[in-house]
Image (cartoon, rainbow, N blue to C red):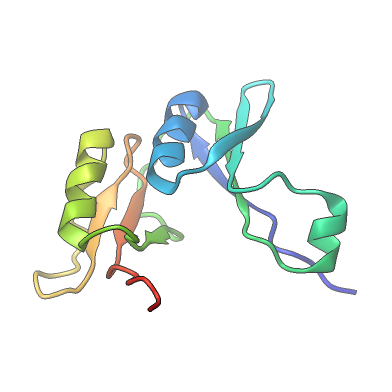
Length: 131
């Protein structure tokens, strides 16, 4: 018996807005809307695919009434594939992200940011094309 990592759930006030932001960040698409929940991903999961191998998880945004009160205990890391870390940071700020200070210090190779609802995530080093 085993399990698969299939979804990462994000509590938020506005699932549509946050899903739209993360679709732009990750080049994902909305794959399901159920009530007020919005699920996005790079693929549409099927039971057969999930059983066959570990696939990339989807992100599921669900509405909650309370706001975030402390630093996230879990966060996403993203790696630019088409440019530098700073170019990606600039693009993400244009989408509604902000720089965040969680005590990381100035001499880091990554940049801590927050999505439009304040959830922290990191922009890591670029992933160069394989050549």
